[in-house]
Each structure stands twice: as C-alpha cells, then as structure tokens.
Length: 132
Image 1 (spheres, helix red, strand yellow):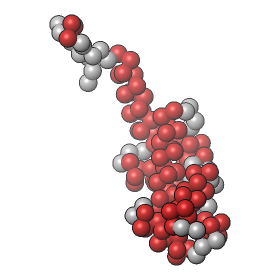
Image 2 (cartoon, rainbow, N blue to C red):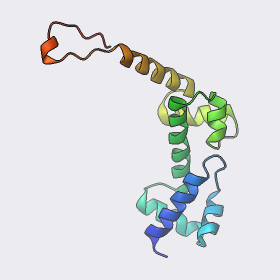
Image 3 (cartoon, rainbow, N blue to C red):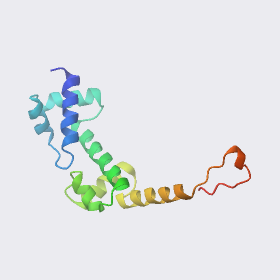
Image 4 (spheres, rainbow, N blue to C red):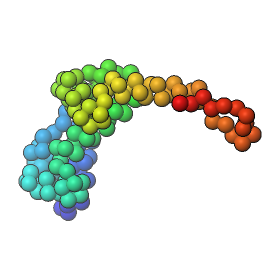
C-alpha cells in the first residue's frame, strides 16, 4: 500500500475513534505497518508525529462541541478522549491560549453581538454601527 493511502486510512481511523483514541502502536497494527513507518509517513505529509496530530484532531472536535453543543466542559473532554476535565483544560489551554470555559464564553458573546450588529449599506449611511 502506498504511503498516501496509509495516511488516509490512519486519518479515517483517528476520526472514527476520537472518544477512545487509539495508541500509535494500535494504529500501526491496524494498518499492518511498523510504528516507525507510521511516524515517518506523518512527519513527511503532516509535519508532526501521529500522536500530536491525533491530539490536534481531538481538540478541534472539542472546540466545535464547545461552540455548537450544550454539553458541559467535562462531557466535551470525555467525548474527545481526554480522561479528565483537568487534562482536557490543560491541553486546550496549551493549544488555544484560553480555557474551554473562556472559549465558550467568547463564542457566546460573539454570537450575541452578531444578533445586535447592524452593518450599514450605502443607503443607510447615516446609521451608526453598534458592533465592537
């Protein structure tokens, strides 16, 4: 199997197992290749090791859930394969620079501001824009 196909299959396995992440060795075993080969493929195509890429996928999913669901921060973390709320919060902060709660609040404020935001058109040139 070619490296690009192996990468594609690895990505499908990762996306399908976000809540219970597979270890790098398990991914390699499913693909019937060595861990070293899997790491070389990821480094060549993605520029990072598989574990790092997997973590980023899980955090991206968590960020989406924070924006689009009413799940608690702990539930979001668990659904994205983090073993505790503190582990999830630490990983999230390391990646995005703020806690999951702060991220959710930021999204909520931006959404609320969007409801009251008026974008003037040329015909409304006398109106004032209230967005911050």
